[in-house]
Image 1 (cartoon, rainbow, N blue to C red):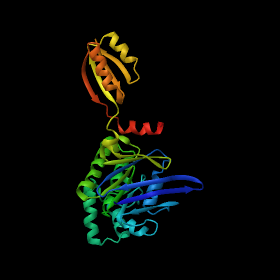
Image 2: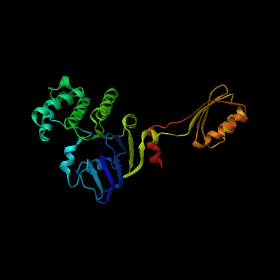
Image 3: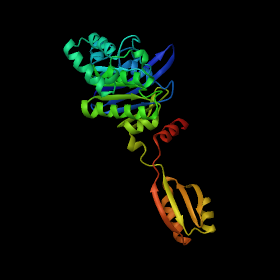
Image 4: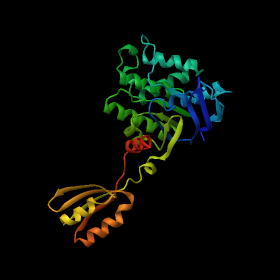
Amino acid sequence: MIVEAKGLKKEYRGVRALDGLDLAIAEGEIYGLLGPNGSGKTTTILILLGLTEPTAGAVRVCGHDPVREPLAVKRLVGYMPEKVGFYEELSAVENLRYITRLNGIPEGEARRRIAEALEQVGLREVAHRPVATFSHGMRQRLGLADVLVKRPKLAILDEPTSGIDPEGAAQILDLIRRLRDEAGMTVLLSSHLLHQVQRVCDRVGILHRGRMVAEGRVAELTASGGYLARVGRASPRLRARLEAEDWALAVEEVGPGELALTLAEDGRPALLRFVAEEGGVVLELRPKQPTLEEIYLRYFRE
């Protein structure tokens, strides 16, 4: 595992930010960390980076303890904060050269990495322009280039598409996929944009009040949310019977003698029986796949 955390707790002046968090991220995985403000996402990232110490629990990142070996962790981890800061008067190339020097990358190798990173994020044509002239989306791309020049084993990206238009966000998400597919990089993506997480992540963890309330592959979490059905030759009597049942969550007339229904998990056998008894016909019956957003909201209601 690239990341292994067991029983992480963190308290700030009596306020518990993390409450026994377990987290495991496999090599080559894109893992989405979700949660509202105050859920513990930022605290988790700070602990993984060795920028704050847990009150209790154990954590290993790339085989190292961030508390005892913070420099070893920093050499192997690339971090892109939500608000990326650069030297405004310097060009993209000059900003990245500064990063490579801080990381002890030899000059010749640094030039190759910088050129490659700027090409990957689509900034080659503006490589020598001052960052002060960059749009917000261009700065986010430069933030990804900042991560790429280190060639880390683990990239931690905090809201990488924040404030970017849909087309630019889609391009960044595609780039994140390529980081994993082509460079073999493991990615921890912290975000509140659930539809984007659903698109790009292999697994997600949902944090609430410092606890992991749900975790798994996106397909598993969204596997079943009941059923959707359409019924033809539906008599008024059949509609009345359906509307009286708790498992029929929604019954709507969509045409002459045609009903559209949303069913609970246990409603399918009864629906088939009712339709047969009343001389109707089932036109469609399929599982309803909830979005990740619906899953997210369900946990917070509970």
